[in-house]
Length: 98
Image (cartoon, rainbow, N blue to C red; front, side, top):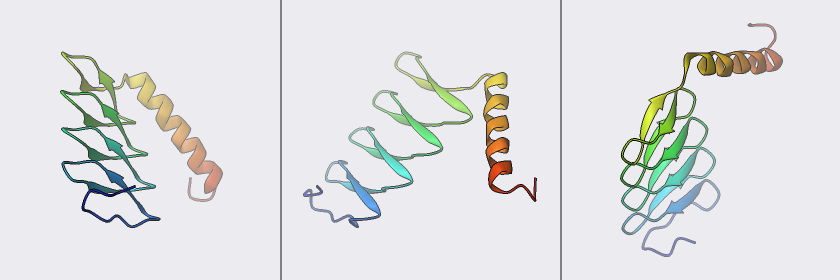
């Protein structure tokens, strides 16, 4: 629930504690702790601990420990594998354009 002096739309948002609170889009975002919380894009990013947290691009980066953590580029072969999977799934959904 969101009882910290802010109202979030019930269906399309979630409450992240941020001093009082902030609203994150429920489907497209996740709550990542940063100081108290921040919104990270759910599909395209992950929460990486850095001091408290940061958002790393999920496809192009990963969380790497450096002191606490930072965003590191994925290895090239891993990127190409992911791109290959994405292209394959796109072809399955839309075989005409690709």
